[in-house]
Image: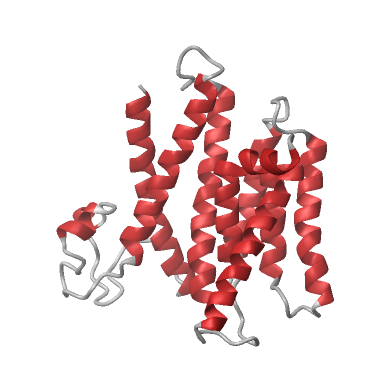
Length: 269
C-alpha cells in the first residue's frame, strides 16, 4: 500500500509539474489559462503523446515533434522536481502517521488534509521559485487563492497537536508584518508588494513560531547567494535580486526539516 501510494504521489507530482509549466508560460505571456496546449515555437497543437510529463521530453529527445525546435530543460526539471517533492511529502507524512496508527491511514481525514495542504504548498513554492527568478514578479493570482485555501485547511487541523488558531493568526501577522516593515523602511524599494503577501502565506502555513525558521533559512541563503554573485561580478550592489526564490526554498526546507531545526535551537516548539 505504501509503495503504491508513493508511486501515485510521484506520478501525480509529475502531472502537477506539467501544469505548472503551462501556468508559468501562460501567465508570463498574458494568455488564457484555458484552451489546448501548443508549441511556443510553431504554435502547432500538441497531442496527448506530446504532453506526457517527463517521458515525452525524453522520447522526443528534447525537441518539438512538428518543428524540431528545442524544448527548454525547464519543463522536465520542474516536472521532476515537483514529482520528487510530492513523493517526499507523502513519505514524510506516512512515516509520521505510521508511528501513530497501526495501519496506513489512507482514509484518515487528518492525514488527507495534511497531505493536501503540503502538496498545495509545494506546488506554489515551485511556481514562485521559477516565476520570480525568471520575471522578478510574485503573481497574486496564484499566491492569494493559495493563502486562503491553505489557511482554511489549517483551520481543519486546529484540533491536532500542531495548530491552534492563535498561533496561526500570529504567524500570519508576523509573516506579513515582517515584510511590511521592510517595505516601509526602504521606501517601497527594498522588497516588492508580492513579498508581503508571500510572507502572509508562509506565516499562515507554518504558524508561530516556525515562521521564524523560514525567515532565517531564507535570509541566510539569500545573503550567501548575493555574496557569491557579488564576488563573481555577476551582480552589483545596486542590482535587484528576487527574494521569492529564497523564501520558496526556505519554505520547502521548513516543511521537511522545520521541527528538527527549531528543536535544535530552542529545545521545544
